[in-house]
Image 1 (tube, chains in turn brown, yellow):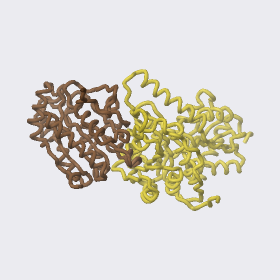
Image 2 (cartoon, one colour; image 1 turned 90 degrees about the horizontal axis):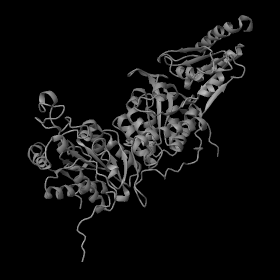
Image 3 (tube, rainbow over the protein chains, first blue to last red; image 1 turned 30 degrees about the vertical axis):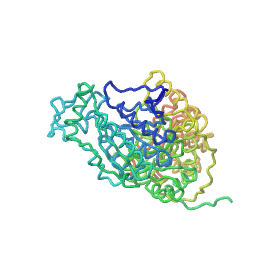
Image 4 (cartoon, rainbow over the protein chains, first blue to last red; image 1 turned 60 degrees about the vertical axis):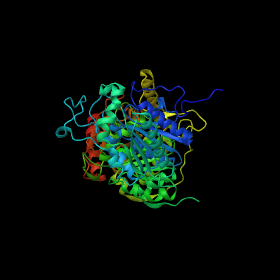
Length: 251
Length: 365
């Protein structure tokens, strides 16, 4: 007797075209978001916001309605969609440059208003799409195309800690930082993404997950070396964990 | 029951008209001289189960408009000058995305903060745009509180019919003044947006709205299609006022509140025997070039009057360039001191003498 053990989520297009580089964690992150949308049974009610950066072609793989935002404006666009169609499920899929640099004001204020939306942020410590420049989360000492001698605090400041800031914002209902460097980590990440959607569905506020993600192309590392970096120096600065969870408080 | 005239302030009139038009969501940030629009809607919209969001900036407000408009509902923001400058990013995206929405721009003096005085210094901002790429904002300029209402209705209709951002270009005088006007019913039919709106893929294929396009030919074709639309708008939705144009030797061109003052000066000139008319474009963009060219062929000169250093002036000159060789005089100044009827009359008289005497000699006057 045949037994189905694995299938593509419905929230991934049949004709999907993944536009990410080989070895990058984006693919896993996208699949987890799609699986959560499937499991919650909300695909037909979901509207996604595509952000400028590696995720701009979200409509090539997500099988949901998508609106593109200008760079950094995803949570403002999400606000516009959600306030006009309050019964829809709205999520953004953004990079750290989008969410925490050019869009930091939109991020903090959407969450301060407690917009009932879900924000997923891929933190790979660099501007991936433009070729690996230093971003808000670039680690001290990290070599990029604009920090060729490694990021120095006296010249370009410190890496910005997103979850530590957003947990203090009153409108957030779920804030977590996860990794995708092992099967256990992936399962944990999916649980957190699901809670970030439940925060919205239960009307508790904004759900947020920061995914420490690899960028083998711009880091100039193999996928294995990249995951070792996530486990090592990235996790030391950006500590994985659940920073806020109002979803579990609600029975 | 026919509605009675009420004494209405321009900003409140626009706000209530947007409600009558069926505006579902409003996003904005305070700036004088248009803050009453947001104040009014902050109370009224929630009472009606519609959305009012105090945006953290105009950069965010226009992106909220983008998201809201993408659902196919009627949506609006309002702002002024230095803050409309912040919206140019979003307006370019909205135009490229073909998302319907209304921007109310109530001009104040610039550059920079300038001050809250009425101005026409943002004609370029509204008609040439500060956003990137090939696009136009469809722009209507009212000259009275009644027109603020009527053109708010028109702006919503045109935005929905052609899937384009529409700018209602008022100024601090219109926003702040009170005069009798009627807020009638929204006179236009509803335009079905269901064929494209982003609403969630329930029992249909998924859709997306994006300005990004990788295919060269598709990108080019898309912008060409948008520009074809502007031709249809000029053809079908053009509004203007012609006053005493027949037999006029000199025609005044002006828009918005200055046109209203200029009209009084034209009346004064006619009373004094000067053959002067007024042309007031109400649709400023796309600009009604043909009509200006036709007028230019029948008159000896044009006097363009604006409360700026000469912005619409260049559209007037471009319009008549291939049609006539008449002189185009300009009277204007940067915002700060409002123009009076007498002041414009003096300019009309001087221009009239200069133009007409030059052509016919003094005996003709």
